[in-house]
Image (tube, rainbow over all chains, first blue to last red; front, top):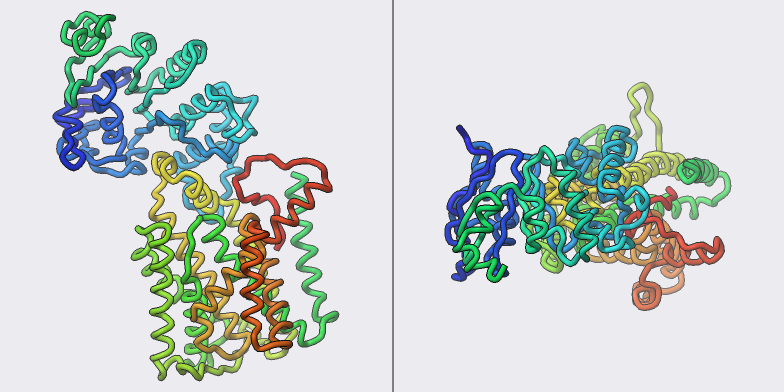
Length: 247
Length: 334
C-alpha cells in the first residue's frame, strides 16, 4: 500500500549548519499529526521544506506515491497542500472577504484571467462567504485585515489556509501569542475546520497538542526522537528527558 | 451598485464630450487632444506596471519606441498596408519583444530590475540610432497615414478631426479595457502580488509567470501607443525610443499620481499641455518640466489625483476606509 505522506530522510543544512539530519515519519490520511520539539529543533525549517519554501539538501517528500520535494509552493498548493504562517501573513490592506476570495478563486482556476471578474462569480462568492462563516468573521467581513484584533487575524490566517480547499493542511504554531481564552477558541476552530482532512501542526502549547493530535512526532536536534499516540509520547522516557522535562 | 452606475455614466459622458470636441476646439487644440489621448494610454500602461504591480521600470520607452518604429517601417516598406494592419504588426512585435525581454528580466527585483530595463532601453536606442538603413537614424522616418480599411469600405483619416475620432474610439476603448482589467482576476492578482507575494505563491499563484504576463501586456500597450504616435505625427524619430520618452512617462505618472487609475491620464493631460505651452515660450522647457518634477516628488508625492481625492474627502466630510487595496480602483474615469 502506498503511504499517504512519507517524509523520507530529510536533510537540510544552511551553509554548513546542519538543521535537519534525517527526519523521517509517516502521516496517515485524515490523521491529525503534531510535530513538537524544543526551540531550534528545526520544526519551522521542516515545515518550510514540506510546503516548498525551501529545498531539502537531500531526502524526499512522498505524497500519495509522488515525490513532491523541490516543487515550488504554487504547484504544491494545486496538489492539495496548504499552509499557515507562524507570523500572521495576510493581505493587510484588503478586506476579510477579499483575503479569502483570493484563495477561493485560485482553487477554481480564476487566477490569470484577463476578462472575468472574480467578484462577479456567484459560486466563488458563496464559497468565500461559507469559509468566512466557518472561521466566525462574518461581522467583520468588510473590514480591512489590519483593523482586526490579534485573535481575529489568526482566524483569518487559518481561513486563508483553508480557502484553497486543501486535503493536507499545515499549521505553523496557530496559537502563538494568544491568551488562554483565545487559545481555547482557536482549538475549537481548528478542530472544526480540519475534521475529515489531514493536518500537520507545529505547536509549543502542550494543551493544544494533546487536544488536537492523534499522533505526535518529537523533533529533537534535527531528527525524529519518537513518534506515536499522545499517551505513548507522554510516557516516553527519552521524550521526557529531552523535552517535556519536568512535565 | 450606485458607485458602479456612476462609473458607467461618467464614462459615457466623457465619450460624448469627446465626440463634441471637433466642433468646439480649434485645429491646434484638437491635435493636442489627440496627442493627450495617445499619451494617456502610454501613461496608463506604465501605471499598471508601477502603481499596480510595483515594478519600477526605466525602460518603458523601448516598447513605445519599438511600436512607433515598427509601424513606420511597416508602412514604408509594405505597399498598400492598411492602418489597422500596421497597428496589428506593431502590437504583435511588442508582444514578442515584451515576452522575450520579460523572461530575461523578471527573475530580478527592485533596483536590479530597474537598472536592467534601463540597459535594455539603451540597447534599443543604440540600435535605432545606428541601423540607419531601416530606422533613418538621426533623420527619423516620415510616413503618410494609410487609409482605414474596414473591410466593406475604406475611410480616409488624413484630416485632423477624422483621425481624432479614430483615436478617441480605439485608444479610448483600450484605456477603458485597462480600467476593466484592474477589476479582473489577473488585475487583482497583480495588485495582490505587490501586497504579499509570498502568500500568493502559497495560494497557488505562479508569481513569476504573472509578472511576465503583466510586463508583456503593459509593453504591448505602450507599443500600441507608440504606433498611434507615429500615425499621429506621421513621423518618428529616435526621440521616441530614447530615455527621454521614459522620463516623460515617469513625469506624467508622477504628476497624476500612481494611487488611482485615472491619475496618470490627468498627468498626461497636464504634461502635454505644459509641454506645448512651455515649448512655445522657451527652448529650455525641459528645465521647467524638471523643476515641476522635483516639486511634485518633494511636496505632492501622491500626485494631483491624491490631492483631488483629499479635497473631495474634506467636502464629503467622511473618511473613505473601504479596504480596496492602496489603489482605490473604484474611483475611475476614462
